[in-house]
Length: 232
Image (tube, rainbow, N blue to C red; front, side):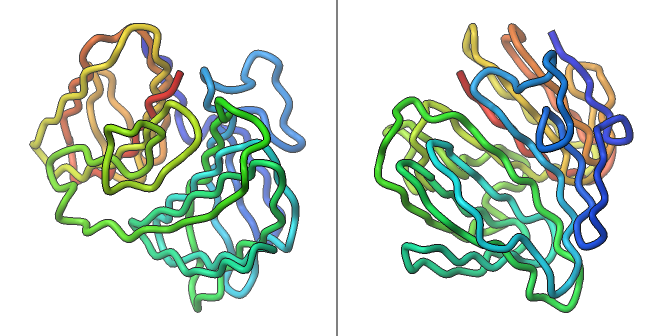
């Protein structure tokens, strides 16, 4: 089962400094039939103006992953962490018992990010933040794990939930496959490009909610950058 979520049909909010689209219910967008996909609670597609961003605000008991598509995002939090995450790289924040943070675009151009929230399997853990650059060549033509809650996944950012975020870049004509486990919830989004997913055509920034598909076959119709979240 694959549900196509075309980018142009996602709920949109424009706040001037922020142009955002929500794959699932978030903020002023409420749809009781679209509250997430398995343990995936939020997938927002954010375009942030230069010299602007999200001022300090709190979170608790949520795993928050930020994937930068363009530009860079600068993080600050009340634990003393600061960091700048560039396009193609990832930061994660385990909100746990509570964390207050800000995310700013300090760049001279707009920054584009995916912000993904996944529900943790344990509440009340110690909060933490981390970021990691991922050499783009490592995921050329194949999926690479970017963040994971599984001990078997090494050299990745750690999240406190049995899920993993993977990324791949495919050149036009390349094909990659991904085997899924029964009962898992898969959500796939294109950062850019165009692909066929088990015969279904997806365009730039489209999403696909997937369940009970044993094998995913992804064929690049043009150069494409793909993110895939595999969750409970």
